[in-house]
Length: 251
Image (cartoon, rainbow, N blue to C red; front, side, top):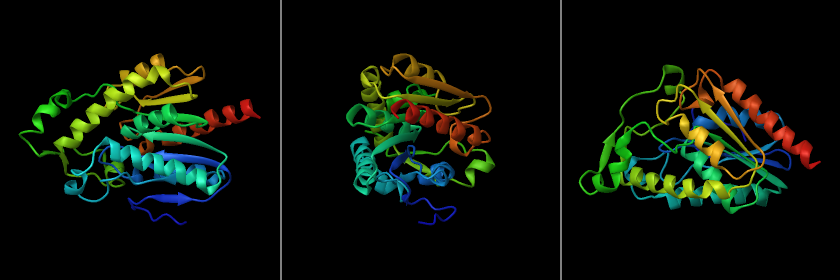
């Protein structure tokens, strides 16, 4: 499959029996992960990035979904790789996608998980109020745009359903409780200049996760959409090395 630049749709790139599931973030699309997908496909992997339910369409359509729908999209993506014939699957997720990838590791057998800027602690404290706010407000306007080199590549909603933010908050709390029970090898990646997630989220995941094999990598000049920022090449290489070490261990 040829990926069109600037396309927010799901993509599936056929390769060998080593699969990589890429999971995008809240209100985002697969465009956030396209360069990463292309990088690992060039290395021979089969890569799938599903578009999560309610994303890449309209805020009104997203308003009809909850974290359970986004989770279902993630599981279906994993199953598609397995049905293709992948003998093992890695899962890498950005932001909320990182939580979905961790939850996949909690529920299914995968070779390794990569959590990128996953939210445990958010910089906007209003998320704690969303269970109440959703009774009085329907949408929240987008506060700020990303840096130009990132903004031109993404497809964010200009307003977000408050009920979906409340559902995200619920999902964060669910996965937070499950982290100590996850034993899958994990690489935690975090940008120091993250404007959305408090960087201590990465340290929390690394310290609390039950994985005997775990790494944490910091990217000093990267913001939240780390997969499109200036250090993305370093990130992709770190993920490649992480996977390579796991392959050698299991050989």
